[in-house]
Image 1 (tube, rainbow, N blue to C red):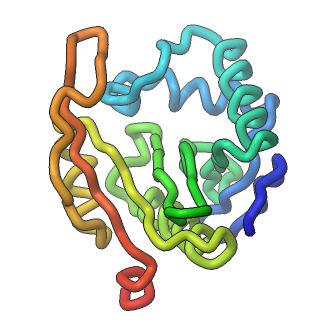
Image 2: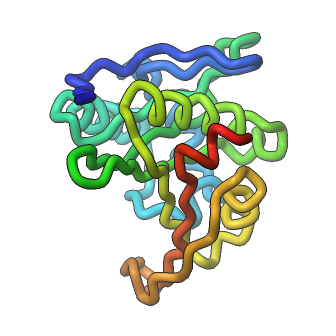
Length: 187
């Protein structure tokens, strides 16, 4: 059975590389994590400094070491620029074999296919290396762009969890999307 043990393997796509984020990446990730458009629907604290980003990177590394989450930095191969992150916020193998996909990308990189490429690398890793059967995402219902993206990329809209999250603006619904291994194999 899969165990992360803090190992975040490098994966290469056509234009991007997914890699472990290091504390030296704090400035680059601050650009993404402090981007109001990129974080508008994320349940995360506002980033004010590279120290804030460094603390989040260290926290994500700790989660990987405890087998609770795995997160990759998304790097443009041609420039070496880190532009966002993605991975499994949680996973459950025994009895479920599922993982929850989460991601964010700096808004200046939207619409260029980077997240689609990154998500496919993560899905391949999840289905083949981790043995997942189901990848799911819980999307803030106000995030119409993300809802369209998941539907376009082979995820099935399963329904809405009403008042699922509490935000500074009150309770919000979450739209549930999923893609099964047997559906991924046919794409």
